[in-house]
Image (cartoon, rainbow, N blue to C red; front, side):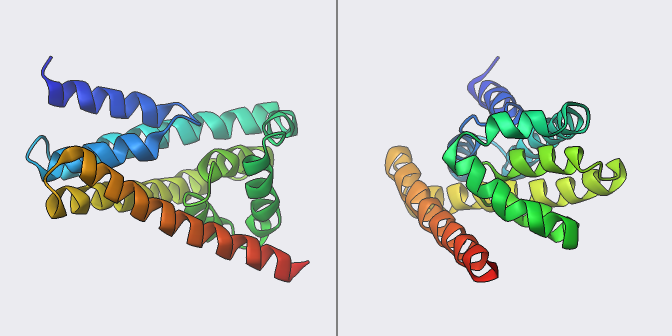
Length: 184
């Protein structure tokens, strides 16, 4: 197995397992794509497939495990914050909320579990999940790709891409928290 295939396999596994550092791995593979190590489209497809399979498993867990799984996960502060934001909005605007949830820390995990526990129709969840996963993985992979094109040193381009992702993620999280406070 060559390094490209090994990297894509690692990316798939990391994307498949909730709460693993998918974003960092995806940024790194975006950088590898920028430097000719692999195809950016393949990086996006592999990560999207892993995240989509993960979402379906989490949806099933939420559907059959109900709120018990969410209650256990909500002991973590970041997940509890994401759950609070998602819970009220998911009932009013389910599809857009599940797409946006991808950008919140652990939002994809919480959104899938919550949709399952709310007994959302599987076809609607799958569609929203596929759109959200594809947009999010494309965004992160493009950040890595851009970092890899701007700076050819892999370590520095990873730090640059991570910095941009951290800033954008913080702005999104701040906006979500601010909007949650405004609704109270």
